[in-house]
Image 1: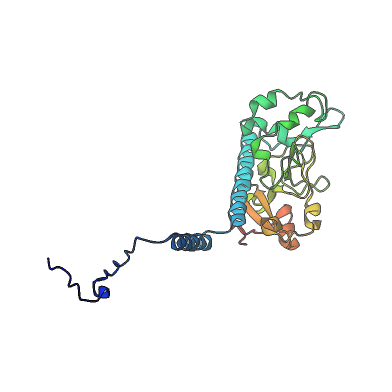
Image 2 (image 1 turned 180 degrees about the vertical axis):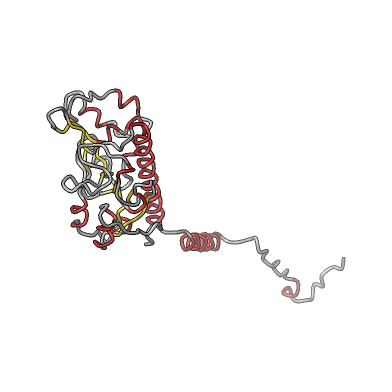
Amino acid sequence: MNEPNPFDSPQAYVTEPEPKKWWQITVAEMIVIVLIVIVLIGLLLPPANMGSNCSRRTLSANNLKNIGLALHNYHDTYGSLPPAVVTDAEGRPLYSWRVLLLPFLEEQALYDQFDLTQPWYSQTNRPLADQIPDLLQSPYLDVEKNPAKTSYLAVIDPENKQTVMLSQEGRSLDEVPCELGNVVVVVEQIDHPVIWTKPEDISPFELIDVSPIGQNDLCYYPALFADVSVKWLPRDDPQQLRACLTCQDTGQADETPAQE
């Protein structure tokens, strides 16, 4: 190796720095890359509330579907749907159809604890309301603010008997004077939750009169039809609601969940 000439300028022998490798990044550059990746992920993922709404919509539809299957199993066992209100010999209301449905919701043990001769608010039966079955709990209700309450209500017309379920008597599906896929049996009414053992439901006229809620899923009624299909009915269309709530003048509902 040649020795450097002592008479040459020292600058001629200054070693140039090696070029920077692509994988040798600074801390500042790493932070910028991480921020860019986070932004890209945020743009690609759907909003959190959209995922939550889809999940709740699916859960509510599954609950209604299982309630419908339970109603049909009850019908197959006893030859009729349960009455909306169970009464005593004097006609006084005791408890809801939801109590009668317990064995068909895989809640036989809970059903066996009820005194079926006593009203829902009796000393024996009232504490049992706290054991609300999962299938009767709406994903749209705050459990802490609505303890023991459900928003799954039967559509009942006690005067004209134009609904599938009747107020104080069972009814065979063969006696329903319309296509089962065109008439609602149970609807989710989150505006008016009730204690699930209490014999309280909703009439078609009350549903039609409820003011629309323009907020995501809540502007639609998740509805169980008599053929166990679940459809979503717009709250702001009284004509379509009226057509699907009674057997006198049935209509078609959109089977596709509402798009937001």
